[in-house]
Image (tube, rainbow, N blue to C red; front, side, top):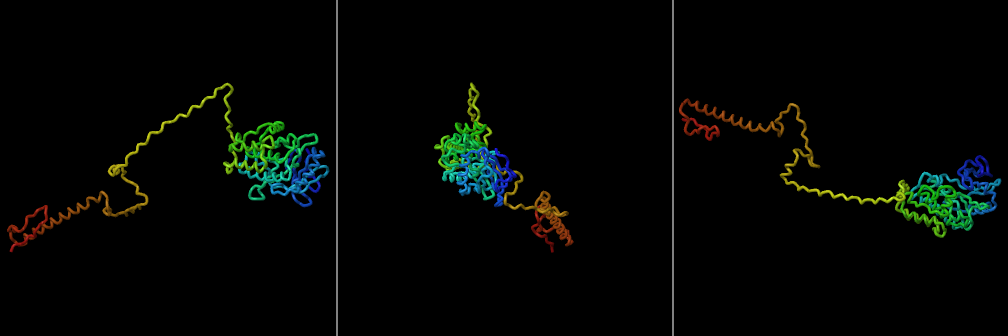
Amino acid sequence: MSEDLTGRRLGHYKIDAVLGRGGMSVMYRATDTRLGRKVALKVMGEHITGDAEFRERFVDEARNTSAIDHANIVPLYDFGEVDGMLYIAMRLVDGSDLASKIKDGPISAQRTLELLGQVAEALDMLHERNLVHLDLKPANVLVTSRESSSEHVYLADFGLTRRGATGHRTSSGDFLGSPTYAAPEHLRGEPVDGRTDLYALACMLFACLTGRPPFQGQVQEVIQGHLHGEPPKVTSLVVLPADIDDVLRRGMAKKADQRYSTCKGLITAAKAALSPVAGEGAGRRRTEAVPPGPPSGAVPVQQQPQQAYPPPPPVQQQPYPGPQQYQQQMPQTLPPPAGDPVRLRPPMPVGSSSFATKSGGSAKWVVPVLVVVALGVLVVLFVLMANSFGSGGGSTEPTSSRTSTYNSNNLPSEVPTIGD
């Protein structure tokens, strides 16, 4: 690996810091001293710059790539060689790569489709120009939110080659690059084309949905997985529709002619498969794996059918009570019906008579007592008047026969008269 060039100058570029390292190159943050702008400077490793075939291919492909103008491809500003070191200067994107966004786990299906859909657009445009990216992986997909209201993707760090070439290898035939997302034909040193990038895009789709690449382990284990192994089903790792397994199986087919014809075709099929969960969050990881089978020689226990519980007895409906029953069942005091005004009697002033009330136990006997007293007073007055009339004439004769006899129970019917 090349030494760290931080703080040094490479031509008219002042190298400020390391952005990342790959199998073939180191990416630096640098300043173009002529134009005064920040750039991403990719410097090829010393172990490949000495390969004459690679150097020739590098110059040819860098010229072709610098002419590409696409919204999802990082613009190339410059390329060249200084002190035996090959470099490419490109736009510095203010954001992060896709690898950092999935390192802690999967992202949502909708976000996956939006990001990789932009990658597919860029790849298909390259393939139409007979170019193959050949180093597609999450670390080479830059994501920024500073240029639009939504996340914008830039495809960067090309390991470009022409369609029909055999990919990046040294003169001795050693494979260059990371095999984590490499297609079988690329690993075998066979001719490559756009379907080689499509295989890598399918591996990235797997990684975004699950949070891990399809094959893991040591380098040789990963290579053998791509060459001969079947990728694990996505639905065995996260909860997603089963149709996505068929999409990825075709996208990662060992033979190129069994894959989708375009990268956009792969994303379109993935959208259809994930449409039931496109608006949801990231697929929930399966913490409970598929239950293991019984140990060798063991007899599986048949699950007993669930016992059916008897239905509850029917509720007996009580007849609606009649008016008399209802009156007997009514409580002594009922709250006023909703909506009726509630009349509240103001408190009685201190010292007021209890007879001012319209009802109450103390006022019920007042009226009969007053009637009896009034009748008694009338009877006494009548008797007194009769006596006074009898003694006023000086005669001791009995009362005239026309005078009616006093009845204590009835009032007099005639007024007594005094004789001549």
